Image (cartoon, rainbow, N blue to C red):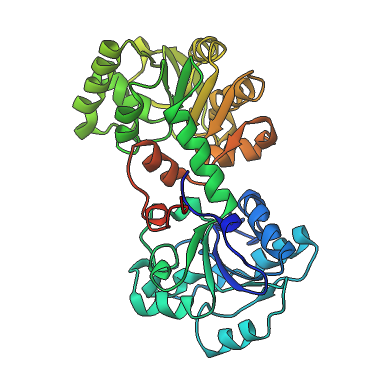
Length: 397
């Protein structure tokens, strides 16, 4: 992490535009925030700026409004929660740019906090439109990117604004890059990657990139079905990425050549349908019926994965082991989360649904680090450049 941060600049009495990732999950019926982890993750940067008398202007997206105003995706509820956590009032703007917003910004005093409206209400955000970026930048004196979870997107509030303002990294962005970079550059061994989720395609590049760094790759979740199919097992009605069968076979072959222990399920939980009412049973991978779908890893697989993890000093986990949102399909995810929570090792959770699962189980504080970026963490570990990080200047030597 050689990027300039908020510690490298003077912020007192400055208007500081901070890109945060407040894309929190909301209850589909009530609209209530179900997990405020992403809000809390940004607190170190926000509090740092408040203590130093900055005039803090936060901007974020929420959901996918696709360039239109969606009432259910307004950020007022986020401002309310942030206000409760900070124990100080957080002002709310009804837009993210324009004369009304400029008026509110002009009234800010040192230490005040303002949350702009959902930047994705504007089509210019996703298009990295110069006019929108310039309008955002005109509100502030300094720009801070503290939204690792969106730094793989070349959006106006992530990349565009850096052309018009002095730009630095926030404390969360710094911690994300240091932690993820650390497990790539100098992990304690043995090092395991515990990978799940639906698709091989989402993790193909990352697996390729970490192959020479890890000792174990443990594969569960929906993506395990494609690996099993590549080994000519019957996988029933499970989703198979037909165009990734050769990729899966190639990854298994490469792991063997590199001396990496790549473990697949030896037994699985199956059901006739993906439903909370479904009846489940456990079968070996040799006995998966044609009319059933794989919904979780089985107890023997859990035991095998646990035995491997207990040997490790570093673990990176991205992707649930089954369809954990449905209780009877969640045993693999829950059990292995518990294993990691009690492991005497560096445990890094790769954001997205995995972070949500860990939060649901109340285990966030038991992990070494829970990333706020699902897609961003995968791209970073794939060796790809994140536009939102690349655009920030390096520290002065």
